[in-house]
Length: 226
Ligand SMILES: *Cc1c(COP(=O)(O)O)cnc(C)c1O
Image 1 (tube, rainbow, N blue to C red):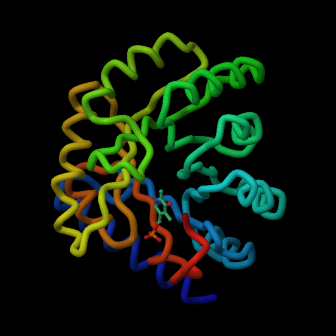
Image 2 (cartoon, protein in one colour):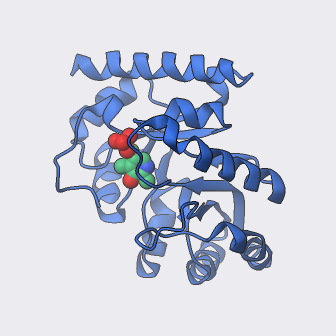
């Protein structure tokens, strides 16, 4: 398990160096440890080693982990959210990265109002226009934001993207830059972009949150990730 502490330390150093290259400090970038498929004991080690936030992509799996671990750090939802899981998701997560369609916004708003507390979200953008990925087309983001702004229990903090799979991290730079430019255009500060293979490039392009799984926890079982 000591691998997790060492991995985390290495990731933190790489974040700090990439942040410096973009004129920021490592602390300006939130590291989200992506713990999907990782067993509770190993997540506990990451928490003890100081991981500042955890990310899960399934409500059911997160529910079991939150029951076992509590909330020593914020939990973030980084995967697709079904409308019928919204109520549970609001109880589990501090930030939803995956607002990818307007009917989900409507339901998040309705349930958040019932709870009496706004929900913090990022709007997911399909930068590569891939048919197998969720998210708004970049051109559709301004009008989507106008529609979401009418919902008073949704607090949009920024944008999130999962760019097309690339062979080299450098190949993702253009997608990250496109998200950063869109964020600037619509006046949103937070940018969730970058994973184990490319988080340094994402930070150089302005990421304020990176979602890092395997670089902290090691490889996942091949089938378990959607
Ligand atoms: C699994 C996942 C990650 C983490 O991926 P790694 O390559 O293991 O760092 C980040 N973002 C999302 C949306 C994911 O589903």
